[in-house]
Length: 415
Image (cartoon, rainbow, N blue to C red; front, side, top):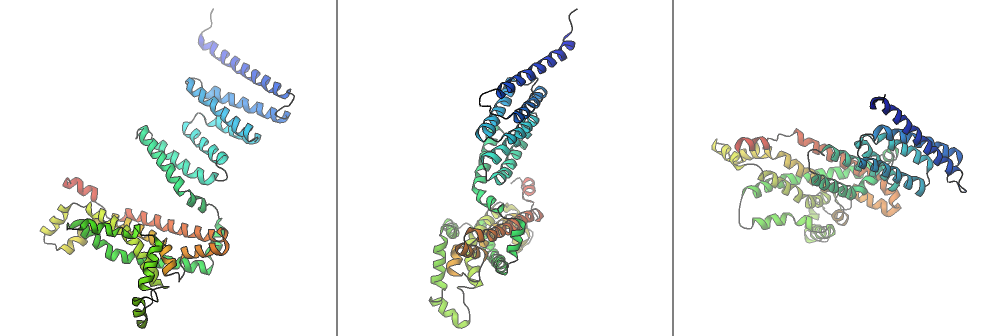
């Protein structure tokens, strides 16, 4: 009587497993008897049991899979063997990695994280941690959108995010160099506290000044068409185009101690160069375009029919601006304020030539670098980076708290 396939399958699976284990044992025995044995007997024994575990995982994961999956499994094993064992000679690390590889191969998402881990902590050393975190986040994002976007869109997104990571990598690397204790000790220095406080005070003051004049200008440019409007919009961009050193020299020529205007203000007790006022003026100059352009785009996105409806109900132009246009553009304006503040607090070139005292945080970083090199200036730079990023994140979060009904309004009006 011929046994049914149900009864013979376990036998043949057991027989194949036993045969594979015997062939593997023969391979390791032959390696042990080579004239120049690549492994010591204890290590050879450990590798044998490790490969037995690899065979077990393959027997669990690969049945029913395609030949391509089997080829990928073998290619991954061969790649780890060549990279870690042959090229680097790290036998214990190879054992750990191959066990993890065999265990995770059944999960595509986990094996992707494993590949990123190997690439970062083996090929990209000594930058393993700071490269693994952003690449893992990019991989998680691409995995999350794999069914909502085409392969081409995912390639564009992944390539762009990797390029963005490369651009920001110096900052990522800087943020991981110093311990929390070092940063706290640096922050307790009186000169660091004074410089950071001066930067926060001056940049906030500059942002308020920019908001006072920039928002009305942005509204006017968004609502009024007049001859030469394009030239005015181009002039708004001039502070972005002008090198910082040129702006510093221009301020010094206009308001410096030897200038006619500087000498005229001296009898009144007003001194601009080398004061907080000079720092604020320099920061206003560099931050002004960021707010005006962003706010202008926000105002242009508001349907004019809403303002006409407000005027038809008897509201004045000023009331319409404050009660209709300004609330609807509030999120865009906040983005502009955030960019303006970030640009103001990071200004260095203009300030170092025109108003290098009182010392701001970027000036202190530069001074410490000239005095003692990157080792002493690095913790101060890291502190400034963390503070700026924290405030930037909080300002971005504040956008969600502002009234913003633009999308709903457009759906209702059909604009």
